[in-house]
Image 1 (cartoon, rainbow, N blue to C red):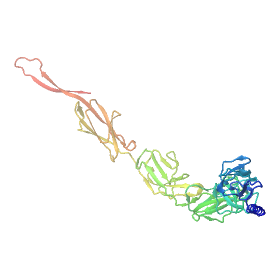
Image 2: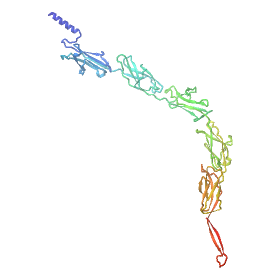
Image 3: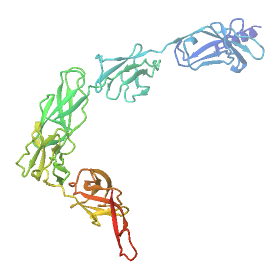
Image 4: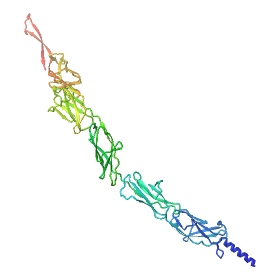
Length: 505
């Protein structure tokens, strides 16, 4: 009896100290553990609950889980939450039901799970200036209020700046304007912070500089050109000048003179100052080229000209405006004197009612008087002014009288008659115009005929009016028979006469 009781006590002692958890009444108790063991879990971490009933195997039991006394659907001995959030905070317990005999374990002790929000990162700008310009340097700071030992991730427009891992970062605003975020990571828990709210950094364009030259247009050797640098905004600029991408040692003024032909090239300017914005964009290039002096070209129309015509001389010096013109006759030292017949307008010199005295060699030259620039003088052109040729009208056949129905030819002869039209007149009215000098007619009435020549190119009179030819048109003659004497006696002599009667129209 004593031996049996001793064995029972030893067995109970062995059962208790071997790790089995049960109450004095023999009912097994569930033991709830968590992994990780910390009761504080951070958002997005994973947590695993394990329910151990140390009687039999794990598979001998099915499990019931409760959170805040609300039963869950899991029946496994492990209950995992892969990404916790604040709603997962609460008190957890578990219970086992033996599969074979339906016996229940006791509920485990309650385990409280506290889900903590991740630390919050925020981006702050250390630079205090209100307006940021292209080229400025800005220092950013990532602030995470709790914990230490962070490694920092910087993002611009959601793209990571891979080389930046420190708490502060310095950026150049020439090409890095946009939305900035930061986030912390570390090896210990919590391993991450929230991604910060965005910090928008906007960049104000720098003022624009531009270069202009005075005078404008083609520039010529010997001239001094003034360059001026204009800046669209702000004041107090110091001006820097560049030629062919090299900084010039010129005084830092708004204008700078350059001498030609020694200083052609590509010119740019920019502004600098101590206040913001501290600089401007470099201006676009202005090309300064030394142009060759242009040649003047003289054109005279018409040439040759006839006395009484209007003659126009035109002087051309390229396409640039601003030229005035000087006209020479007979030699390049003799300037043409203006008169009521000789007038000038712009590039045109006009001779009205041309006379033979207007003949001779002519030249022209262009000047830009405000710049003391003269073109190369034109080649000489000879003006020829001559009397109009006399038109000579002839009749073939040269009959003094024409009978009705006969055909005659009027010929208009004009010396130098090239590229002209012949105009025939009857009693002062034009009756025929052709490029041939002959006019065949069968006149019905008397008339005075003349002719003259016109220039085909402009319709101007080419010749003087011809001599006149008076045509007398007669009806065809009638034969008239007369007898003399009209009364005769037998044996008398008689005379028969045949005459012709003419009638004029």
